[in-house]
Image (cartoon, rainbow, N blue to C red):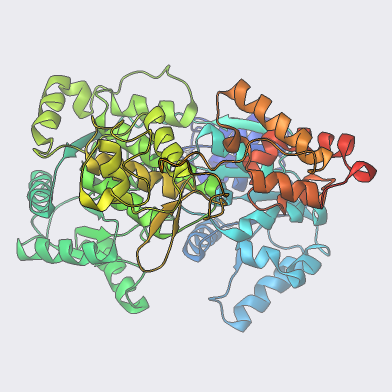
Length: 628
Ligand code: ADP
């Protein structure tokens, strides 16, 4: 195998080892960066040939005597496929994972320690083990490749906690790193670079347009309408019969749905099977094999059937239910048409889908930052479904942050925008739709709760904000709220949906076990005495400012948050809450790491305000402290 000095040499390896005539878009740049020993961050769509971006430099580095390339990969199946393919090409590669027998593991370790491997694949969990790290120190490592790097993003759909520890490897291994993903917004790209501690990485951003994929959205309510549309789509692609070319994947949000949809399809004569993580290993393997062999041409699956799936002739991908983010959607839909021939990607969308996703998010409380980003991700899917704009243009803009993408000319909007708008209007439910509330209205909800003397249920709150005279509102000061009746123009369901989003984002919290009620996070439930006037009107129980009893750090931070809130047009508590100020005053942190242990101060806040906070603590803290 020749060593590589230039892109021309790389092209030779591309032909000789991989049998490809030309680099695909993005591959050349990524290979060049890695061969030059620089870090790289590669964003290329699924199926575009990302693995070659580190496999080819691995071969080059090995030939030049620089050692083995270590690949961190999140899935055993993914590792094994790549190892098999590389061995088939005559490239010595191995994987280390928990599904191997002792002998196989031992052989991989021996080959690795002898420096015989061009590539070694390991899981992030394995890479974090001290024993593995000790072994790494004994072998020359040429390159660190991190596949599916978006798994490092805590809010993302594929988050893997051990990805957060990969950066530690850089202390053990003096080698450039290349991180690869098919699914990252500009924000997630930044997160990948910072969490993996990439050094001034070359960023390679591929073209996200997939000219052979025709995207469309169908606005549908209810299971029956969706099943009917699904059967029609499958039949139109000739997927009713057992024989014929091509196959289809139908993605559902829940395991139960995969079972019922597959059952309904089989009852209609479609060769369908289902796949989800709750099935036994044997059943999953059978479903996979039946689909691979073409006995079941339709696979109904949850997102467990995902990364590493590589069937060239998937002609149709239907999302029976709306996924939680556009990243998840595009990654799943992108599995269609990998052979370059025309394929269709259809999203079924209904207002109920968003409510379901919000409910799921509210039922799984998580950090505020993650909840906010999940909520934003859901908004992006809704926007994709509702906007009358070229579907691929919208997706590309989402991923690249640029609006300069040509229209695809094959999605439903490009083909007939009027028909799409008409169908969307027709499917709008007859009862008042759940509309998104503008930010002023959601802010008003938070203010109303903040003003209350005690927690209230969300339905009662929604009714009060709509101006209802219901008896149930007579308690708790709801009828005398200044915000009473201010949201009369919105439906109760819309206000309740907005409350759910506020809960998911952590701006409101639930209290009480038997009857969950709403409250402001961190605010004591009992208002300070005197917060009520004689007429019973609830005054804002919010405390203003910090008394002179508070330490200088607390006062300085309070002034800082007020200034910042004015500048950003935020409420002061959105900069950080009073309890955060008190905790900083108490702990007097002197580093970003110490700030991270202050409850209520997440990574985004630290990123944005951390340096200012530390400067204020330095300036006002220490001996000047007089607050206990
Ligand atoms: P990804 O990881 O981006 O989803 P893969 O690395 O699995 O994609 O590659 C997808 C397919 O593209 C593979 O079958 C691979 O052999 C093929 N491929 C990769 N690079 C090239 C190239 N330069 N020319 C032709 N085919 C390629």
